[in-house]
Length: 147
Image (cartoon, rainbow, N blue to C red; front, top):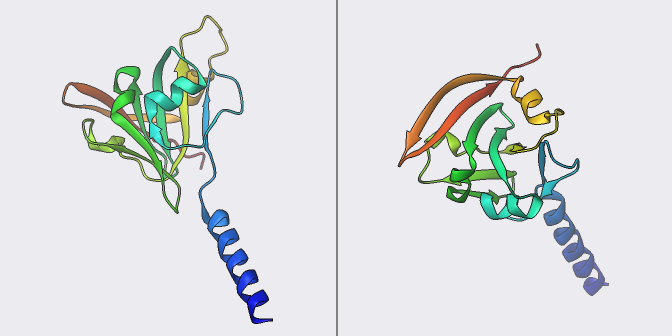
C-alpha cells in the first residue's frame, strides 16, 4: 500500500510540473493562422522554421509593452521560457527589448497581399520612442487599452 501511495504521489508531482509549464507562444501577423513557438532559441532560428523572408517582429508582453525590431536584430534575441511564461532576453539591443511574460509575437512578412494583419495589429499600439544600442535600433510601443 505504501508503494502505491508513493507511485501516485510521484505521478501527481510529474503532472503538476506539466500543468505549471507555460503554453506555446502565439505567433500572429500576415502568416498562416495557428503558428506557435514551442521551443526556446534565437529568434531568427525560431522564425525561420515558421517562414523565411521576415522583415519585422513586434514582441508583445502581457502588460502591453512591445518592442518592434527588424530582421537584422532577430539573431540578437533569445526566446526562453520559465515557470511563469515566455521571455525575450537581449544583451546587444535596447533594454526595453527584454520583455517578461510575452503573450504574442506579431511578424511582418513581405507579401503582395493587401490583407496585412501586421498593420492592423499595429493600430492597437501607441509609439513611445526609438532607441539604439551597438548599432541596432528598436522602437518601443504600448498597447492602447480598450477602456
